[in-house]
Amino acid sequence: MIQKMRVWGCYCAFLLMAALVLSCGHGRYGEVIPPKKFVNVLVDIHLADGIAVENMSRPNVPKLDSASLYGSVFDKYDVNRTMFDSTMSFYSEHPDDFQKVYNKVTAKLKRMEDDLNAKQNEESRKSREIIDTILKK
Image (cartoon, rainbow, N blue to C red):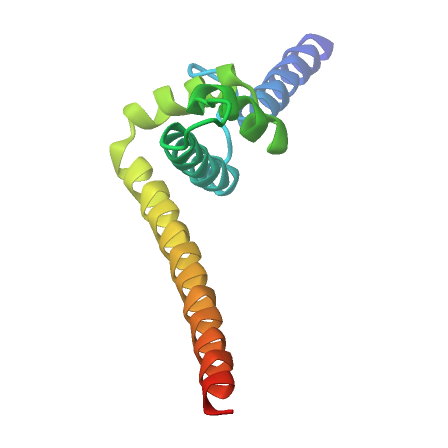
């Protein structure tokens, strides 16, 4: 009877440990970034790439490359390159899940672009109003 209780206790402890390890995103792929956080990381990675490309076209400005900006993105979300690579490995074997994540990335980038365009249009409209007011005087 005591032997069965020990075996049962070990079995329960093993299941608990396995659940804890899997719930933390560890496993065959290492530590996988949760999908919501990964969406934000990918959005900021794309923004970092855009900053680097824009920076390259400006003369007399110290050059940045996107890889150097990735560290800031990783710090912002408390992830590291190993976690990012593990997450990409996971999604390379789960393309349907990656498509869902990436659809959210593109939707968020589109919203950001639309918001920026709306602000720029509003600023242009206000500038035109000021110019029209000055010219009417």
